[in-house]
Image (cartoon, rainbow, N blue to C red; front, side, top):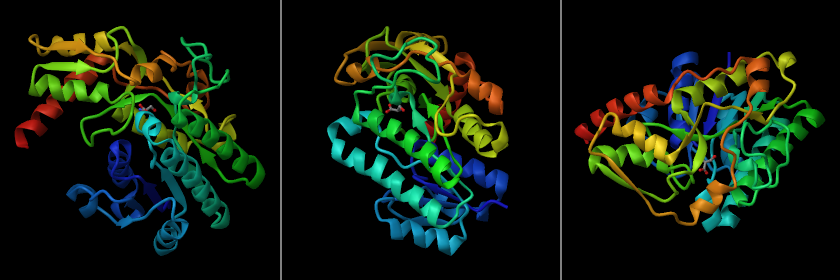
Length: 318
Ligand code: SER
């Protein structure tokens, strides 16, 4: 039986991942940890919650020992846009924090550590369309540099110590639960909120900016599926491309307009445009499909319908 620790459980992905893991493995088998953010009532009341800081190794070690943890999902990160505003903090959290977790994994003989990477691991010189799993990786953001480092470190710990570290390269994730923070792809969530609230949105990227995006249920199903995959079938460890939708901001806006005809989207690019322009538009995910059965379910239309339904409910309540 897995005893799972989710780091960054109050964040955009961590919060929904924790609830799904609790549903699958039992509430008490999944310990949620946050750094400073107060957990939602749902997260706090549905299972164990602890405060811990990945930069303070002992604080995580105490949780591992107290709850007899054997698996970590490390969802704590400083994303790309915030990372450009504070590269030193990004390096500490994304690299030194991960290093601490890998060392704890080695010392405590943990069964598995899941560490998401990102499309940000690629750079302007990488082929942009159907980007291969194995290709030129020279990112130009601190977040991207950190993510490549994380992939290499995870692969190293696997080969050197037999620590089972695994990860997918996430695209921009769209979700209706916890808001994302500090990312370049945050627009893809904000646009839905503003469409419902104000019927208009001003995007900080150009209309023709195409990026890989994914709906949260697919993102969660993907990482859990990889965690559960038979290790003998895996030819890679921390660097699986996974792809779902490849969309321009204009196409995303048009899909919302089908449901909210008055919706108007305007474009005022800022520094995040340069970051977005350095990333791929779509990824070749054949290795993930072949080795562990990656298969996203949501289309753009199904996602937009679901987002608008869930957010309308949420905004009407609040
Ligand atoms: N969503 C992330 C970001 O925008 C990409 O991994 O930074």
